[in-house]
Length: 275
Image 1 (cartoon, helix red, strand yellow):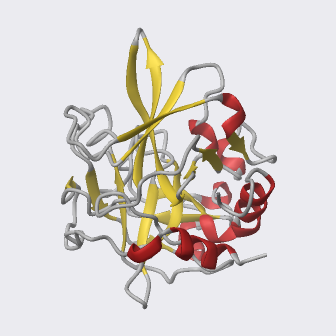
Image 2 (cartoon, helix red, strand yellow):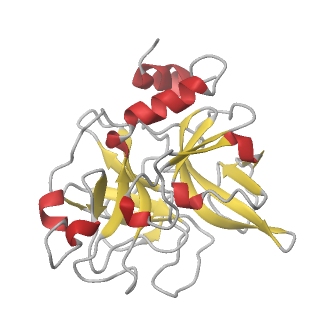
């Protein structure tokens, strides 16, 4: 069987993975609108409510038929859809592809506990009914090597359509924010997250930089030494005291702790490899 990373590279064709055609503006300290299509693997997960599809969570395109997201974003009781190539939620701009997602195409980690987000395993995969059209505006993110840990204060970027601040408005335009990694030794200190944070998670950001409601499931984008962007985290939870709470950085599911689960789930639920 081809390795997971090699399969992703093959499927992304001439574009490769993790190399956006439109390079992100990677100098943002606090959140601001992203450059259009600079995070071309970002997707919007939406649920039907009162006859209208509303943005619910983010996700990451990791193969031409597979979306990586958070387990707590999966809602089996509602009608779900995925929008790929999205940038402005309020306007149709031509790059969007819309996929209705039946329940049987949503795969939640077997150890996920819906009443205990902090217990970990907040990760899920969504299988699309057909391959997406890879283009300059829709591309794949790379997966990090299994077990890879980023050093403290490593620069990463969160992206999504979550609230701009606790209780604040939901933006139409995709946002991005610099969220430096907070390593386990710091994040697990008693006056930080303590035992709440697990080694299968990665903390990022701080009191003025965080993800918020609506960013869940979206990527923590980190650039490797090879210049490619890797999805090192899946947005999982923030402090109950607010998104921007001192010593309570945003917590992500650490993707490099789940490479085997990702590969196995895709392999067992695909005709061949990622197809």
